Image (cartoon, rainbow, N blue to C red; front, side, top):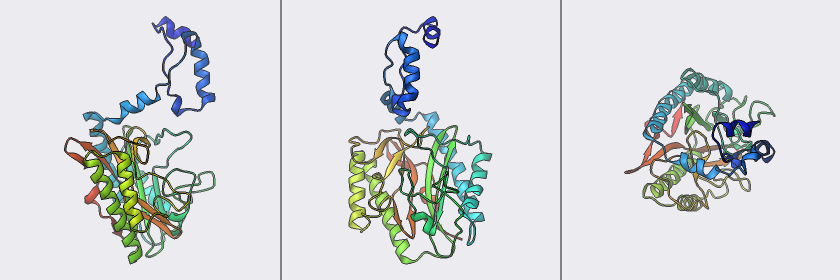
Length: 312
């Protein structure tokens, strides 16, 4: 019936499907239903490529999203402090995001991954890995939601990593900053300074039109030189092998700052750059969302407008 309806409306061939984003058992249902029209081509790469370069209207959605996201961080700053739980901080950020129209879903390409909009991890919770392909895991609220923020309470002088996503009309911005109730000791601040240096290296490579794989190599080599090879983007051997991911209507768009992406970030493309180090006692790092225009890499999120560390 599906194929017949399409044929009645002028379709002479089977439509393309994004086989790369759904399980085969699911896509087979459509393939079988459309078989009278022929074979369905895989258009995953076409759709992904089309989404890489953002229009002027799309770029404006990112700017609006970044404005809301900044207020989410202000909410975290206002309610945080010793004894507050991770989930209480997420709730404060969530209230801002929801009130500004966030639809409740952060879309991802890689099945079956889904993403919590706010990942806030305090102290030891920042050193707990998860199934998710990212640097930071966390305890989650319960075993079925076994990553992200949970009921861990903030303790004095421990790192609190705040990674917040907001989507305006579906367009995603991603930003991470550090908070602390008191002061971080020198070992943590040194690690953060190193991650800022890695971020600057990645941005510089992309700014001059270098390959995404080159940005990964230079960023990783600097982190290795600074002594972070076994803790960059996770703890060995379970480390994520990227330093940045493109964003748009989905959190995990292409290209990625990783080995194998032998091309530059296109002009008009948007990317979150997020070097982090993870230790048993916690995690620390930085992240901003960027766009590459004719003049190079420009920050969409706060960048220097919000400090690397905020003290409660």
